[in-house]
Length: 116
Length: 115
Image (cartoon, rainbow over all chains, first blue to last red; front, side, top):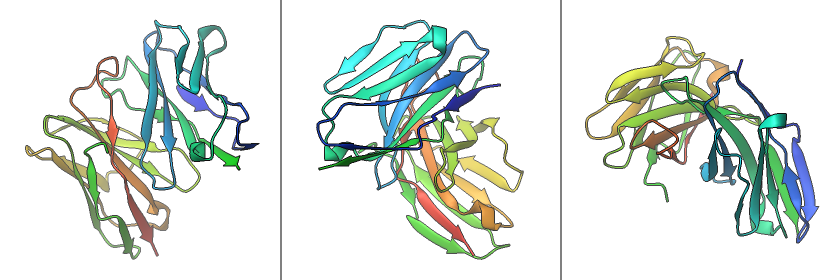
């Protein structure tokens, strides 16, 4: 069965610290897509990144980086030199290629608090 | 700004009542999905509409129903409201279906409280 696990419920760091948010997924499909979304207090989900199962290349975008490892079914997200504006709930999500709706299956989220 | 709007922003209803939530997508977005997000949890897929037809449904009872209109707007209807229906309801629209090509754009959500 498909599932996304974000074991870290809440993380608190001091500004400028690096922080890694963990995501472990389960799927039987060979074609799937992984996502990270940010949800600030306003509630709107903000898309951060999408990876497909055939592309294990890690990605860096400014202070954000993502590590995709199929061998451990993980798709971890690192914020370097965190800032107060990074405070939000972060969701990892999975979409399976065998599902015609490509619905997003979300983890339970990790609340990140960056203190000044 | 994703170009997806939802109304109303907040809503309070009584158990047993019916509610209609609305979503307006960007022009050309023929796919809309609805998600329910209970407090402290990740969003759960309710259903998806593609070109005005239901295309996939999550683990929600039939009292959750929807419509998609030719003008790229959509509705989520919930009958016989229960206390557990209290949640943030999010709609997401996309110009197509494959995540390889298309991104889903989420609206700000409607917070429904059932008392």
